[in-house]
Amino acid sequence: MMRALFSAISGMKNHMAFMDVVGNNIANVNTIAFKSSRVTFQDILGQTIRGASSPQGGRGGMNPAQIGLGMQLGGIDNIMTQGSLQSTGKLTDFAIQGDGFFVVSDGSRNYYTRDGAFDIDVAGNLVNPVTGLKVMGWRADASGVIDVDGPLVPLSIPFGTRISARVTSEVVMAGNLDAGTPTYNAGPPATGLVQSTLTVYDSLGNAITLNLEFRKNSAANTWDVFAFYDHDGNPLTAEQQVTPTPGQIVFNNTTGAVQAPANGILNFSLPTLPSGAATPLAFDIDFSALTQFAGASQLNVSSQDGAPAGALVSFAVGSTGEITGIYSNGANQIIGQLALAAFTNPGGLQRLGQNLWAPSANSGEPIIGQPNTNGRGSVSTGTLESSNVDLAQQFTSVILAQRGFQSSSRVITAGDQMLQDLVNIIR
Image 1 (cartoon, helix red, strand yellow):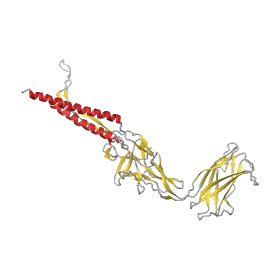
Image 2: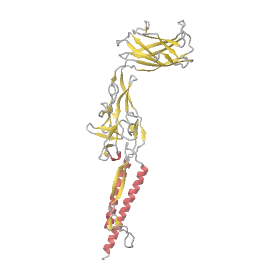
Image 3: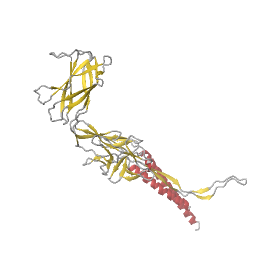
Image 4: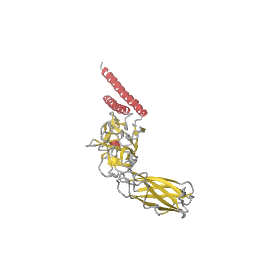
């Protein structure tokens, strides 16, 4: 009789723990990147009334007779499934699609979290604005190179920092020159002429407009390239011709592609400049993407590597965690790399509160690396991961916990009544 009471008490006690876990899950239904918990129960070793026996002496074997002594809490498991992603539109909100954890630090210890609701503090550090913990990764050097084998450091987005001007060294042009263009004639009016402009930058970041003239040569499929620019900053003086010009481009009469020069590159040099920049300004123009087919002539600059000085005004984060700075001069340069941590057994991590996790003896040590590598998930910007709590399942668990508690309490009530009847026998 007393066994039934103690068994029922264990049932009530552990169903209360079940309700505690379910209540915590429901309370965190809107907590960013919260991972729900699950309770498992185990029975307690039963009391053996009669042991088992094997067949012997013409009798068959007998099973053991045992009375259970109640139940116990087997474990509380962390359910580390992916939560749904919600778009926020905020640049500093990150979410992980797949496995992995952001690494954050208080300066002396690293913590791990799926909560990517980050912000930028007054010093330009990427931080969790609630806890002040800094987001860890790798910083790029002045040329945008990142050493992912180095130690983790706090990431920063240094708005307002400037990058130096970049002198133009290569320009790539694309488009088409009309194969039906007549041979060049100076006129007036000039015929057989296609004009275009492009902008190059000197060592001080000054923009220089280059006027290009493509003149159809009398030789088949051949064009002479002339270039002119303002060499003294005076609009009243004639433009100076770029040296060495004219260059010459020859097209293949079958494919329409550039045949000469072999690499499609012509070298240009500006001997004098209106500014105090270093001279000469020498650069290559790659015409290999040009074609000569019948149709309207159309030329455009595909790319050029020069730029004026600029300041950091924005940034973007790719799925691989690369942080790219966007500068006021239109230049983009990598300024950092976000780090993610993976664990052999993420379910073994220990909760620390504030959406933080810490390694335990059964989680394994963190394996730090870049997103999208070795099983680590990708990073999505402008989004946050929602809690993975399933309310339908949790409310069902509420009913199970409540009914389990009630049933155990009824056993105690029935046991008490039976003991009372036993006491009344002697009356």
